[in-house]
Image 1 (cartoon, rainbow, N blue to C red):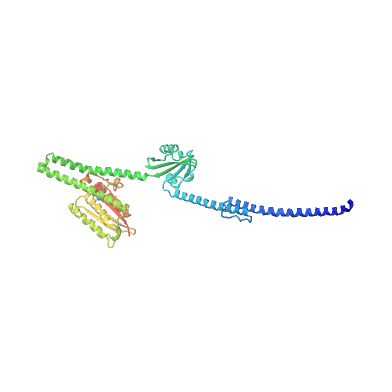
Image 2 (cartoon, helix red, strand yellow):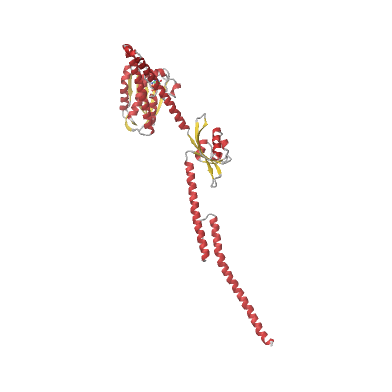
Length: 435
Ligand code: ADP
């Protein structure tokens, strides 16, 4: 009968119900534990990835227990290490570039396709005398409003080959730049801008023009005696050699002119030797008493002085020592004393006086000659500059004596000055640094 099975059935149902509840509860806990085990390492990996994204590439991720997650974490740590080392390399390269740009003597400008300045180095700010702020973002047409520069830039922007040319930026102040341009392209060969390199060649240009002027002067100076020698030789050949009185007269002129030629060449060589030695620091300077050097210079000029009955005197306190190249200083003194004798009238006196000042040794060469007007003073030490060309030539001058003196004194880190006025004699003063 149904009644007999109902009770045990009910009991069985309730048992099944409670067992079901227990199983559901246990499986819920089990799935919670399992899901926690899966999500926790993912959360850790997420946090680690976020740290990497913020740039903390050296803070490595912890390695989870599960195999798959562990290999993912190891791979991400490896990626972070490589990224860190690449970033460090890029940073290092950027620093290197910045130092190179900063220490470049040449100015470097990066100009974008719209002709705005995108980058400059320190040399450009120095060359253009403007701050970086005043240059960045500005139109290059405003900054360098020079038509030649604009033309070069326009060409550079439209041609792939680099351009190298010279432009005069400021003719009044003789400012010359050598300009080099190159197009800047990205990885897809699209034009990003133009790189312009500026070298200030004003000093080179100045030296070039000095050299040209010097060569022209030398040629001119040499031509005069050569023309004269040639003229007299031709006259002799044409028959004058047969007249004894002409022969002697012309030969004496030829002799005089050849001596002059020799004097000019000797002075040019002397000047170039002094320049070369002082440029390369090749001349030796030793500490030595000054008195014998002055005595030797005086002795070398005594003959010329006595020919004009000029008294030659010197005063030098005992024990003065200077660090000099004896040969050069003797040469400088001889040039000054010879000039004093050459330009002074007969029966006057030439004096050399030495004074020991606290910082320097002062050497005066004084004469009672015609003096030199102030307008000549600033140019007197230039090569071939003469107050009275004809007079200098007549007296055997080459126009190089004072230029040689100036170079010698400069090579000794000294100074030379002149005090003179017409009719009051001249005083050339050399200052040499004390040992
Ligand atoms: P130079 O060979 O013609 O003497 P320098 O270079 O020695 O060349 O001198 C340049 C010029 O300076 C001379 O031509 C002369 O006009 C002038 N000068 C130099 N020294 C004296 C001096 N002591 N008195 C007057 N004029 C001088």
